[in-house]
Length: 186
Picture 1 (cartoon, one colour):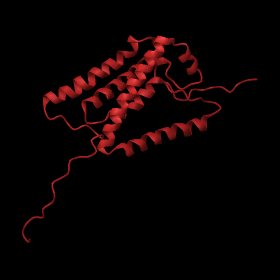
Picture 2 (spheres, rainbow, N blue to C red):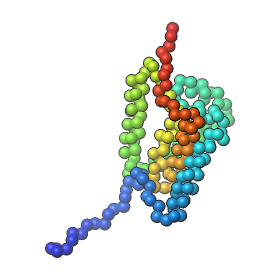
Picture 3 (cartoon, rainbow, N blue to C red):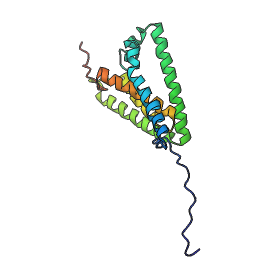
Picture 4 (spheres, rainbow, N blue to C red):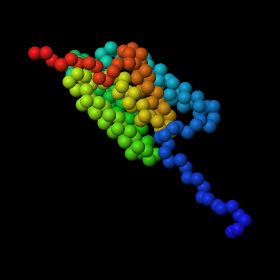
């Protein structure tokens, strides 16, 4: 009717929760999410490798010698590494399901596909003089976007993988993905 402002339907709830977690509404929620669910797992991740054997995480890389490192682990360390990989895969699956329910799985898939395509393209351009060597902390840093869900579990898993990535960079230094690899001499 004339003279009345137009009526709009109420806004629908935000569907893409994976972009950023909702801000905390109370101080208790702030402490719970940031301190307990993010900082404590991050500190655990920072110290996880030092509590385990030196060879458990340092063997996780994509390089020609990595297979030999895996074979030298022994049965106990191999089982520990497999258990950690299974737990990490389960946590990643929970976060991927949460992202899919929020409607952001396609966008996340495009970002990961673009990152992999860039790494493959650069590796192909540098072949012959540089070899791809992905350190374990790069794997864990690449898993961080999976924890960007609006849940305490997402914050905890993101804190843990970022802690492991930070510890790896601090311990081994920020290495290049493509170190120089001289061509073989005959």
